[in-house]
Amino acid sequence: MARLKLGVLISGRGSNLQALIAACAETTYPAEIVLVLANKPDAMGLEHAREAGIATAVVEHGDFPDRESFDKAVHAQLKDADVEWVCLAGYMRLLSSWFVETWNDRIINIHPSLLPAFKGIDAHAQAIAAGVKLSGCTVHIVRTEMDAGPILVQAAVPLLPDDTEDSLAARILTVEHQCYPLAVRLIAEGRVQIDGDTAIVVMPPDIGDQIISPPQS
Ligand code: GAR
Image (cartoon, rainbow, N blue to C red; front, side, top):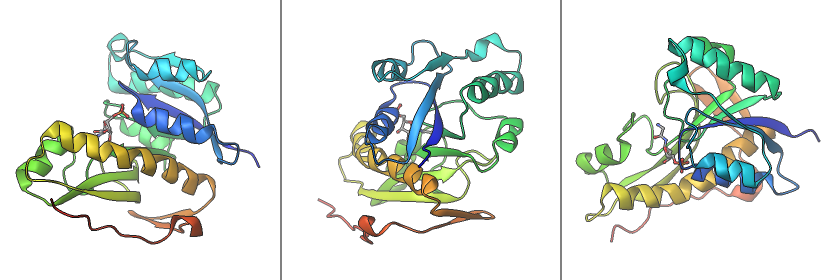
């Protein structure tokens, strides 16, 4: 079976990229990463890609007069690499509507909250300030509105009374690393049907149907 060709866009550390690299290393996994592209030359994730023998590219946003011309340069790299789906993995750039429309329903993003709660860059701080007892992560199809679009996979973790942004971020990251490879697998196996603003997802039997309500202390 042909594997789905992924382009992963990053800006920094790249731990979600590492989770995808590890998943793609399994021979039965239905996707492969054909390009890792960063908007910063010092993005740590580029090193992970190089170590795994994956092609990398850097397109620096400072080199372009506006968002759309930058996105067109990114698009050209993705097309050159035969990318079929784009995975945003800690990519801290807003996408132009031109890019989102060109890659319509073929871009996914991971966000460290249970969307639609706590959109934006300070999701952990927002969750702590709101006093929620559960937070988590969301993998969703990207639409022009930031951190919005049909939801594919979510996972919850407890938010504990003494949590800091860092401790909550670390706990959420552990489930991010499970959810992102799962979401890609669902797409690659044809288990996702997008219906307007929502997605119908047929979970494989090996995932089970657990909804975990964890202890609060
Ligand atoms: C992750 O927590 C991801 O959910 C978040 O940035 C981090 C990147 O970590 N993304 C966003 O906040 C997007 N709105 P990583 O570089 O180690 O994957």
